[in-house]
Amino acid sequence: MDKDVWLHERDLARQDISRNLRRKMREGRLTNKSLAARMKIAHSTVSEMVAGHRLPSALRLKQLADALGCTTDELLEGVGE
Image 1: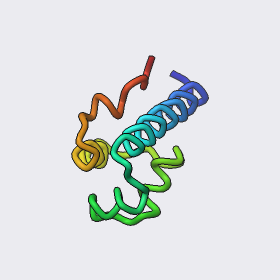
Image 2: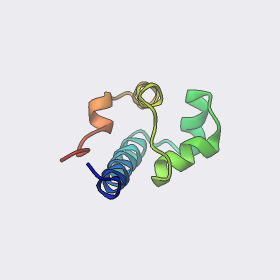
Image 3: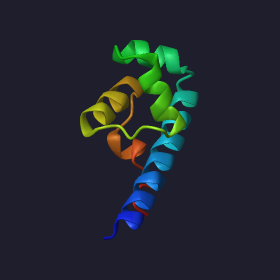
């Protein structure tokens, strides 16, 4: 896979995860700030992931799922399709 294709796939993954995060946060009536407090991480970190500017690590994805009361599969829905 060449670099341009890899970068494009990464951008699509960030967008999919961002969309899923926003949906789960809406369902749980959570703000970026309240989710950050649940996870005990910086508000800016959550904001970057929700905005699609940061791709969460595998560990962070699990922490997000736990804080949102969902599975990692739900947060990864649409990624790679």
